[in-house]
Image 1 (cartoon, rainbow, N blue to C red):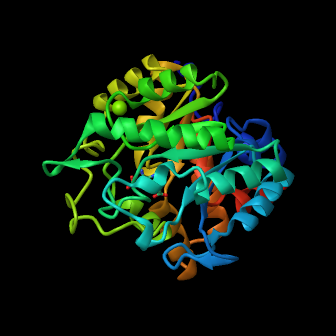
Image 2 (image 1 turned 45 degrees about the vertical axis):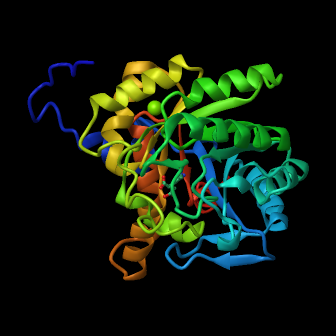
Length: 335
Ligand SMILES: NCc1[nH]cc(CCC(=O)O)c1CC(=O)O
Ligand SMILES: [Mg+2]
C-alpha cells in the first residue's frame, strides 16, 4: 500500500482529524473487542482460588471455579478459554505420565467448563512440561529432548483432552512433525471437528518465567538440560518463523500462533502478510507481570497499558490474543 502524495502544510494538517473524540473514532483503523480475547487460565487440583505471587491478579482455580469462570467468559463475550494445569510435584515423573490421565485435572476442568458454558470454546496445551519432573516439554534421551518418542506421548495426551471435550488442541512443544501426527490421530479417531492452533513460531524466551511459577513447573537444569533452546526458536530469527508456520499449515493446523507477544510483533505481521491464516499471539506471563509490576509502582497507568498492549496485536494484524488480562479487558471494553 502506498501513501498518496500529501499536499504540503498547511493544506495538510494531520491534527485536524485528531481534534475530537468523535473524529478520532471515525478514522480509527483497528478495534479491540472481547471477541479478540482468549482467556489464559490455570487450574489446580485443590479447592478454591490460590494467588500466583509473580502474577498479581492471577489465581489458580479449582475445577469448580473454572466452571464458574467459563460462565463469566460467556457473559463477558470472551469466545474461548485456554486452560493450563498446576500439577503437584509428587505426581510428576520423567515421562510426564499424568499428561494422559483421563481423570486428570485438565480432563475434569474441560468437562466442567463445557457443562457450565458449552458456548465457550476450550483450548488445551499439548506439551508435557507441567507433568515432567525435569520441566521439559518432552522426553529426555541422551541429554536432549527426543523428538519422535515425544510425539507419541503428545498424541496420547491430545486424545485424552479431545475425549474430555476440548475444542482446540494447541501444541506448544515445538517438536517437528507433531501437527501432522495430531491431525492424523484425530482423523482416525473420528474427531473431524477438533481444531489445531499450533504454537508455530515459539521462541526460547525469558518472558515465560512467571508461568513456570504459576503451573509449578520444575526448575530446568537439575534433572535435564538447563534451557529449551534445542526445540524453541532463537529470538534472533525471523525467516525461520515463516518456515515453522508453513510446515504447521501444511501438516493441518487450522490456526497459528506466535509466542511471546509484544516482543515479537514483527513476526506476527510477517506471518499475517505471508500466509493469510487465522493468526494469534500469546501475551505471555512475563508480559503480564511487567505491566502489573510497573503499575504497582505507579510508573504506568495499568488500565491504559493493558488496552494499549492488547490493541497493538490487532494493529499488527493478529486475529486475537491469548492473555491473562482477558476478563479485565473485556470488562473495560464494556461487554
Ligand atoms: N509448553 C509449555 C508452555 N505453554 C505455554 C507457556 C508459556 C505461557 C506463559 O508464559 O504465559 C509454556 C512455557 C514454556 O514453553 O516454557
Ligand atoms: Mg515446528
